[in-house]
Image (cartoon, rainbow, N blue to C red):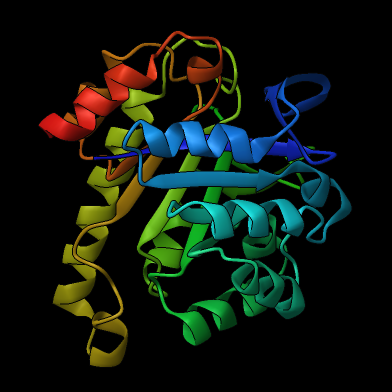
Length: 266
């Protein structure tokens, strides 16, 4: 399982929010590059960068920070927040992103999001499935988590898996920044349903071009609520391909040395 620390950016600074509420902003470092270099020095290879200004403005804003981190480290960066147009995507990739994450756009303009999957491929495009939990599993949220849609979490993911999506970052917004543990059961259910969906489609789908698009295994990246190191092996056991860790690192609930050892021993 990949370890993916998060750097969220407002006004060019490294911040954390709680449950996506911009009023809870806490600045952890004025220089995101400094933070990224600390991660790299600990043996970490991946980084999740979120442009929170961009998420609010519905366009890429903090691409200069992305460019700086990408040009001065060897971290493999996935970048999200406010990517709504082909131009935004070009800027993100030209600024050094290895992958981009689309959340709101996948809900509000699936035609554009599908065109990105077709153009760049499923290795480059990540589906952001951020949700508010309910009895059905959850409802997808959009626009920097400011709005809740009527789309149910698992059918939303399954629908895009059938369109070729492999990577999915799934954040339980109710747990984000709360340091109370991740949504183990939801992630288990998503992975179970995705396997069933693949099997059902491979049996019934006569259109081979569509059938081959469906991946055998969804690459699910857990996000939100990570609070202790002991949760990481459990997520790996559940089948998560990666885990995004934010506040737990910044509040020293999980030490970089622990992450180094986890990476070396996996």
